[in-house]
Length: 120
Image: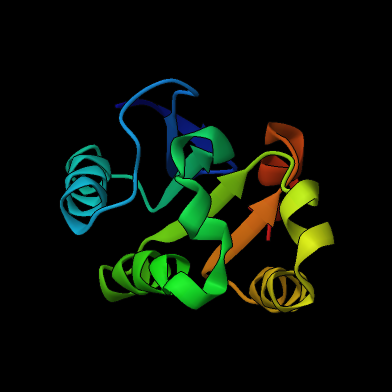
Protein backbone atom coordinates (compact mmCIF):
# COMPACT_ATOMS: atom_id res chain seq x y z
CA UNK A 1 0.00 0.00 0.00
CA UNK A 2 2.78 2.42 0.88
CA UNK A 3 5.93 3.14 2.82
CA UNK A 4 6.22 4.89 6.15
CA UNK A 5 8.39 7.98 6.17
CA UNK A 6 8.93 10.89 8.51
CA UNK A 7 8.95 14.51 7.30
CA UNK A 8 10.04 16.98 9.98
CA UNK A 9 8.96 14.63 12.81
CA UNK A 10 5.59 14.02 11.14
CA UNK A 11 4.79 10.37 10.27
CA UNK A 12 3.63 10.05 6.66
CA UNK A 13 2.40 7.13 4.57
CA UNK A 14 3.68 7.52 1.00
CA UNK A 15 1.65 5.44 -1.43
CA UNK A 16 3.20 3.86 -4.51
CA UNK A 17 2.37 5.16 -7.99
CA UNK A 18 1.05 1.76 -9.01
CA UNK A 19 -1.65 -0.07 -7.17
CA UNK A 20 -5.33 -0.31 -6.60
CA UNK A 21 -7.40 2.62 -7.77
CA UNK A 22 -8.72 4.73 -4.91
CA UNK A 23 -12.23 5.56 -5.99
CA UNK A 24 -14.53 3.85 -3.54
CA UNK A 25 -15.20 4.18 0.15
CA UNK A 26 -13.79 0.72 0.88
CA UNK A 27 -10.43 1.51 -0.74
CA UNK A 28 -10.17 4.86 1.05
CA UNK A 29 -11.08 3.40 4.44
CA UNK A 30 -8.54 0.59 3.91
CA UNK A 31 -5.85 3.15 3.13
CA UNK A 32 -6.75 5.33 6.11
CA UNK A 33 -6.79 2.26 8.36
CA UNK A 34 -3.40 1.12 7.07
CA UNK A 35 -1.93 4.61 7.50
CA UNK A 36 -3.35 4.89 11.03
CA UNK A 37 -2.01 1.45 11.94
CA UNK A 38 1.45 2.63 10.84
CA UNK A 39 1.05 5.78 12.95
CA UNK A 40 0.85 8.16 9.99
CA UNK A 41 -0.71 11.59 10.38
CA UNK A 42 -0.62 12.26 6.63
CA UNK A 43 -1.09 10.16 3.49
CA UNK A 44 0.63 11.10 0.24
CA UNK A 45 -1.21 9.63 -2.73
CA UNK A 46 -0.02 9.98 -6.33
CA UNK A 47 -2.58 11.34 -8.79
CA UNK A 48 -2.26 8.12 -10.80
CA UNK A 49 -4.11 6.28 -8.03
CA UNK A 50 -7.28 8.35 -8.49
CA UNK A 51 -9.94 7.69 -11.10
CA UNK A 52 -10.81 10.48 -13.53
CA UNK A 53 -14.07 11.19 -11.68
CA UNK A 54 -12.04 12.40 -8.66
CA UNK A 55 -11.05 15.44 -10.74
CA UNK A 56 -14.61 16.16 -11.88
CA UNK A 57 -16.19 17.96 -8.95
CA UNK A 58 -19.76 17.32 -10.09
CA UNK A 59 -19.25 13.62 -9.25
CA UNK A 60 -18.54 14.54 -5.60
CA UNK A 61 -15.89 11.81 -5.40
CA UNK A 62 -13.13 14.24 -4.35
CA UNK A 63 -15.36 15.76 -1.67
CA UNK A 64 -16.29 12.36 -0.27
CA UNK A 65 -12.67 11.20 -0.17
CA UNK A 66 -11.44 14.42 1.43
CA UNK A 67 -14.26 14.24 3.96
CA UNK A 68 -13.19 10.71 5.00
CA UNK A 69 -9.64 11.91 5.61
CA UNK A 70 -10.94 14.85 7.66
CA UNK A 71 -13.29 12.58 9.60
CA UNK A 72 -10.37 10.38 10.62
CA UNK A 73 -8.14 13.42 11.30
CA UNK A 74 -5.58 12.48 8.70
CA UNK A 75 -4.00 14.90 6.27
CA UNK A 76 -4.07 14.15 2.55
CA UNK A 77 -1.58 15.14 -0.14
CA UNK A 78 -2.64 14.51 -3.73
CA UNK A 79 0.77 14.32 -5.38
CA UNK A 80 1.56 15.05 -9.00
CA UNK A 81 0.66 17.11 -12.02
CA UNK A 82 -3.05 17.83 -12.29
CA UNK A 83 -2.68 20.75 -14.71
CA UNK A 84 -4.69 19.06 -17.47
CA UNK A 85 -7.60 18.81 -15.04
CA UNK A 86 -7.31 22.35 -13.65
CA UNK A 87 -6.94 23.83 -17.14
CA UNK A 88 -10.22 22.19 -18.10
CA UNK A 89 -12.15 23.29 -15.00
CA UNK A 90 -12.13 26.64 -13.25
CA UNK A 91 -14.18 25.08 -10.43
CA UNK A 92 -11.46 22.48 -9.82
CA UNK A 93 -8.78 25.17 -10.03
CA UNK A 94 -10.62 27.17 -7.33
CA UNK A 95 -11.14 24.03 -5.22
CA UNK A 96 -7.42 23.18 -5.36
CA UNK A 97 -6.46 26.74 -4.45
CA UNK A 98 -8.78 26.67 -1.41
CA UNK A 99 -7.54 23.25 -0.29
CA UNK A 100 -3.92 24.39 -0.54
CA UNK A 101 -4.67 27.32 1.79
CA UNK A 102 -5.80 24.95 4.53
CA UNK A 103 -4.10 22.40 6.77
CA UNK A 104 -6.02 19.23 5.80
CA UNK A 105 -5.70 18.56 2.06
CA UNK A 106 -3.06 19.73 -0.37
CA UNK A 107 -2.57 19.24 -4.09
CA UNK A 108 1.21 19.34 -4.55
CA UNK A 109 3.53 18.78 -7.50
CA UNK A 110 6.27 16.65 -5.93
CA UNK A 111 7.72 15.13 -2.77
CA UNK A 112 10.05 18.08 -2.18
CA UNK A 113 7.02 20.38 -2.01
CA UNK A 114 5.31 17.92 0.37
CA UNK A 115 8.28 17.91 2.71
CA UNK A 116 8.46 21.71 2.62
CA UNK A 117 4.73 22.16 3.39
CA UNK A 118 4.93 19.76 6.33
CA UNK A 119 7.65 21.88 7.89
CA UNK A 120 4.86 24.09 9.15
